[in-house]
Length: 281
Image 1 (cartoon, rainbow, N blue to C red):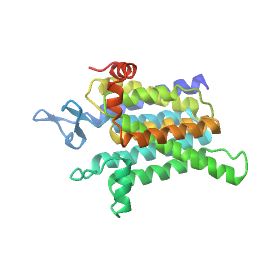
Image 2 (tube, rainbow, N blue to C red):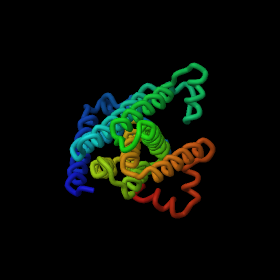
Image 3 (tube, rainbow, N blue to C red):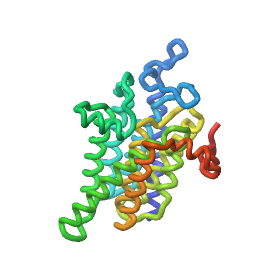
Image 4 (spheres, helix red, strand yellow):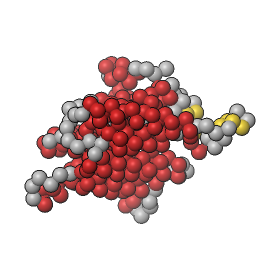
């Protein structure tokens, strides 16, 4: 992994994330509320208002960091996966029909089976498509066409699955950022490894204070983008057996989330609870 690319992507990712967040939050105060803030305001687990503006800021920082430190097909794959997941997540954040209770992957797929396209269903289909496109761009042809197609399918599923998994973790301050930093710290080579690592760590560092301070949250836009870039790094950097194992783990955790609360598991597991609470109020 190139130290120069790692540093370049980290610095650019942090700088763009901080600049975009500051720019998006610079509206005038009207009656004590920042003008234009309402569509971006959500209620966190404490019942307190938080801003979703961290999401587009982090997504922009991730894309910029991947561009600055990457090259060739690895950079192109990272941009397609990250920008696509961030944009589709942002649509879900801002256009979701809150009058219905369509939740979880199973809920959105069930709605699709009934002929209803929710914003979550659109996100599932869209991130699946952009992840496959990113995998097709980034996967090297080292054998026959059949093997390449199989690799693209595994890589695309891993990118999309990781994008969804990181979003499932965005339920407490800092949780998604910590999980992403841990995942990009795993040994992996391949095109874009340094750029992906630097962008995730840089953007995460810039967002850390607002997220852990419970002023901001990633939302779908930020968490899906973060997971997509992490997934791209794993998909393009791990050998085939480890990619298949990683995909199995992602699928297993996603299915488990439909039945089990991650927060409940973390709260009753001492070492997970300690890591989860690190830096929080």
